[in-house]
Image (cartoon, rainbow, N blue to C red; front, side, top):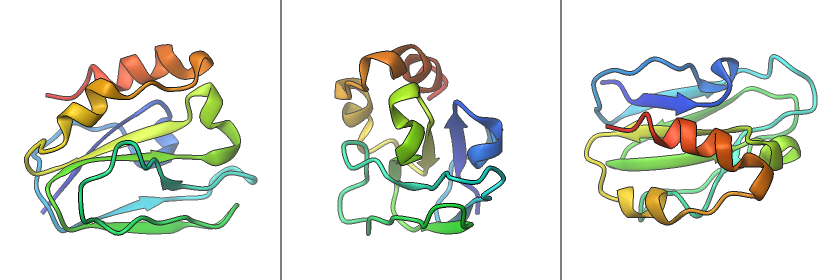
Length: 117
């Protein structure tokens, strides 16, 4: 099964749009030192376990529930380093619509959120 990643940095989670399904591992490859991947709690499927990867380390998120999952890199989140992972039905799409990113990241967030279908 596959999940779709929509993001502002291709190296972060990949940028392909495809079939939305569950039970997929999403991998953040620490290609640049000083970055991490962690839950963006404002956009997270209800009941899914949050995660926080270590800095400069690869991390794998296994998506088991339908929904949109927001992921950020803490050091550069304010500049828009975030991703949206879509798995199955968009059960929490209202969270995406209601989300207000930090002002400098707003333009990037609008671009990645606009790719949700």
